[in-house]
Image (cartoon, rainbow over all chains, first blue to last red):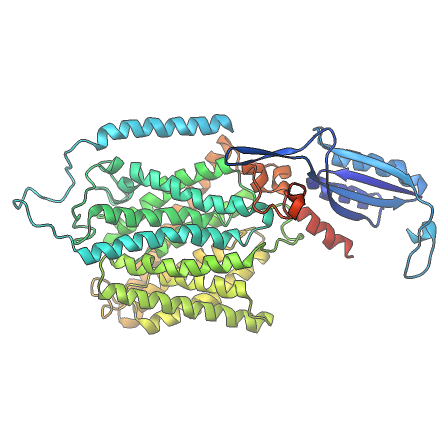
Amino acid sequence: MKKIEAIIKPFKLDDVKEVLTSIGVIGMTVSEVRGFGRQKGHTELYRGGEYTVDFLPKIKIEVVVPDHLVDKVAEVVAAAAKTGNIGDGKIFVYPVETAVRIRTGERDESAL
Amino acid sequence: MKRFSLALAMVLVLGATVLVAYAQQPAAPAAPAAAVAPAPASKIDKGDTAWMLTSCALVLMMTAPGLALFYGGMVRQKNALATLMQSFIIMAVISIQWVLWGYSLAFGPDKGGIIGGLEWIGLRGVGVEPFDAYSKTIPHQVFMAFQMMFAIITPALITGAFAERKKFSAFLLFTVLWATLVYDPLAHWVWGDGGWLKKLGALDFAGGTVVHISSGVSALVCAVMIGKRKGFGHQPMQPHNLPMTVMGSALLWFGWFGFNAGSALEANGLAASAFVATNTGAAAAALGWMFTEWMSRGKPTVLGAASGAVAGLVAITPASGYVGPISSLIIGAVAGALCYTACNLKSKLGYDDSLDVVGVHAVGGTWGAFATGLFASKAVNDAGADGLFFGNPGQLWTQIVAILATYALAGVLTAVILKVVDALVGLRVTEEDEVAGLDLSQHSETAYAAGGGYGEFTAGGGSGAFAEARARTAH
C-alpha cells in the first residue's frame, strides 16, 4: 500500500477528483492548505502599500491505494492537475504500513 | 488590462474636453421661455426643493451602502469586496455618464418619442430655473440629479445576476453601454417629455418598468449568457455575512422613501400618499414572503424577510403614486408570496441568477406594473388614471404594452451588448481566478484579513473548493 499526496491548484480539484474516481479510487481526503514553492506568493495592494503574501492557497489530496495502482494514480493526477504554469504543485508517494477500517476491523488492502 | 484602462481614460478625457467647450456656451435654446414674460419671478419653492435634494441623497444611498451591503453579504467571502465595488463604482461611472450625455438622451428634447436629443449634453442649458415640462417648482438641476440617482441604481441591480464571475473590465464596459443604450432610451419612453409610452398613458410612478423590469430582464439575459458559477448546483454557496444583507435591506427600505415619495417631485399630499403606500407595500411583502416560506419550508428565515421587503418595495414602485393604503397592502402581500415562489423556480429552470435579481426585480416589477393597471385610482392622484378595479380596463392593456416593450428593449439590447463586450474584453474571469475569488484576482485585496498574527496566512479568504471538499469527505 502507498499513500499518494498531491498538492494542486484549488481550481483543479474537480478534474482530479473525476479522474481518480474514473480509475476506481473510491475514497480520498482533501484539505485546504497554504504554501509556496518556486512560485512564491502574490501581492496585495492597500492604498499604495504593497503586501507580499507568501503562502498561496492550495488543495492537498491524500489517497491510499494498493501498490499496483500507484503509478497509474500518479500519472492521471499529474495529467489532470497540469496547467503548464508555475505553481501546478507536486505529488509525493509514501509507504503505508497498516490500514484499519474502524467499523469492521478489516485490515490493510481490504480496508481500503 | 492596462491597455483597456488607458484607452478608457483617454476616451473620457477627450470626451470631456470637447464637452466643456460646448456646454459652457451661454445660450440655452431649450431652457424655459424666459423671453415671453419679462424677468418672471422665480417659481422655485423652497420646501419642494429641500425635500427633493433630500430625496436625491436618499436614493443615492440605496446604491451604496444599501444595495452594496445587500448584495455584498450574499456572496462568498472571497468575492465580498468585488461585489461591494460594483455598486460603489457605478455611483461614480453613471454620475459622469449622466452629466456628459445620459441626461440629454433620457430627458433632452424629444426625437420621435424614442430618445432625447443631444442638445443637453454636458448639461448644457440645464440650469437652476425650473423646466416646466418636468417639474414646476424645483430647479431643473435638482430634477436632473434626482433622475441621476435612478440611473445609478438600475445597472447596479443587474450586478447580482453575474456576481462572483464577471471580469471587472467587462463589468465597467457593460455598465456604460447598458446605461446608454437601454436605460436612457427607456427612461425617455416612459418619463421623457414626448416619450411614446408616456403619450400612450402608461403609468409608472417611480420606475417599475424603467428600473425594475429593465434590470430584472437584463439580469436574466446576463445570467444565461455568462453561464453558471463554477460548482453551481453541487457546491454550497451560502451567503458569507447575512447581517450585512439585512442592514442593506433596511437601508434600501429607508432610501426608498426618497425613491417613491420623492417621485411626487413636490413636498405635498401626493408625496405623503406615496410614502404610506411604499411603507405598507414593503411591510406586507416582508410578511407575505416570511409566512409563505414558513408554511412551505417550516422556518421563517431572516434572508427571506429581508428579500420580501425588497420585493414589496419593487412591486409598489410603479403604483406608489396612484394607489391607496389597502391596495398597496394587497400589492405587497402578493409580491412577497410571488417573488418567493419565483426565486424557488430558479434551481428548476437551471440558470444561475446568483442573487435573485430576476425573481425579485423582473417578477416583482412586472407584478407591480400590472397591478398599477388594476389598482390605480384618480381619487389618489388625479394626474393618473383609474385602473381595472376602478372601472377602466383599458389602463391594464396600456400597462401590458409598457411591460412588453420594456422586456423587448432590455432583453434584445442586453444580449447585443454582452456579445460586444465579450468580443472586446471577455465576460468571465478564468476558472482559476474564479476559484481564487474576484477580490484577489480582480483587485489584489481581501475583505477580511482574519487569523490574528497569521493574517498573511489566511489572506486568501474562505475557498469554495474547501467547502466542496468538506461536503465530499462527509460521505
